Image (tube, helix red, strand yellow):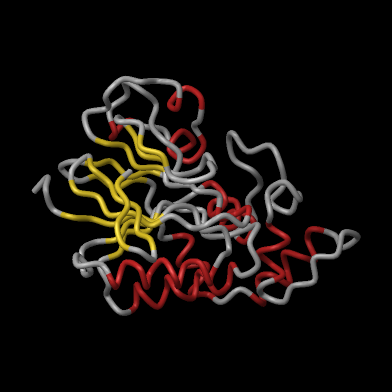
Length: 238
């Protein structure tokens, strides 16, 4: 049903405390118990990647109606642990300061000193990162759709059916999608491009409010194409 409520949570980026607070806001909403879609980028930049994945694994284990999507940073971490190099369109190592892998590994107690060889850091990471965390990263979806919404991490290639979208676009696309005002058939709910707060553009809703840079983590309630930010004072229409 297009009028069925659903929640969505933007890019978390290692902010375990913010995630716990967002989950509390969802639990306090009158529609608590409706599905929750997490838009990816659980890791990097913030101080507690391990705590974030622990919380999400606990929710999965409890059978909560959660949908967990993959972000480009999550794929970076998975590929690093699996021994794979950067994939298109990635150009940097996961350990590059601009990506944030070192901050993620610090939360697991891994020595990520600048002079340590990457192979040694990876070996220590494989010892430190719990198997269920790697299973979590390997099990993430790239998209989720309902009658009224399409949930993805970064966006869609305009004019391409959802079933034919390329993974690198779902995880990485920006200007081609962000600058296109056309209707996509459903509201596209995404993150990836950090703003000062969530913004509804009519054809899409960007929920990356910049938690990776210390700004508040966005959690929203959606009904059809309408959306409300969840705050300590209740719902705020977007």
